[in-house]
Amino acid sequence: MTTVYFVRHAKPDFSIHDDLTRPLTKEGLQDSKRMTDFLIDKQIDHVYSSPYLRAIDTIKDFAKRAQLHIKLVEDFRERKVSDEWIEDFDGFAKMQWQDWDYRLPDGESLNQVQRRNVAALRELINQHPNQNIVIGTHGTSMSTMLNYFDHHFDYQFFNRIKHEMPLIICAKFNGENLVDVEEFTINELN
Image (cartoon, rainbow, N blue to C red; front, side):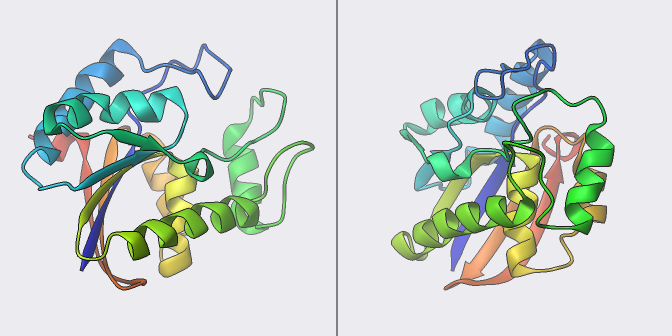
C-alpha cells in the first residue's frame, strides 16, 4: 500500500497575481507549521511539490524537520487559468467542471491538468510502492487527480474545499488503485 498525503497549500497572498511566485500570508505560514505537526509522525519517505512558491512554502517546514529533500515536479503545477487575472474565478471554475475541455486563451482545460498531474502521480506511485509520500499541491490539481481515480471528487468537492487552505487528503493506493481517502482540514490538525 502506497500512502500519498496531498497537501494543498496554505493561504496565499492573492494581492500577488503571479501564480509561480505568490507567497503565503502570515496566517498561511502559521498554518503550515500546524500541518507539519500533523505529518511529522507519519513516517514519510519522500516529499514532492509543485514548483509554485506557495506549495513549496507550505511543506518546507515539514521537510526540514523530517530531514527530507523537497523534489520539485513541474507537472504538479496548478492549472494555468490564462495570461490575464480573472475576476470571476467561481464562474470560470464552474464552467471548467461542466466542460472539461473548456479553457481561456493561453490557459489549460481540466483534461490537460488531469493528464499531466495523473501521469506524474502514477510515476511516483510506481517508483515508491509501500511507501509514504507527501505532495505539495493545489486545489484544482489535487481535485482532478482524485477525480481520475474516483468520480465522487467532482465540482461539489472542489467547490466545498476551495477555501480549505491548507488541506490534507490522505490517499491509499494498492498499486494504481485508490482504496481509501481521508480528509483533514486545518481545524482537525491539532
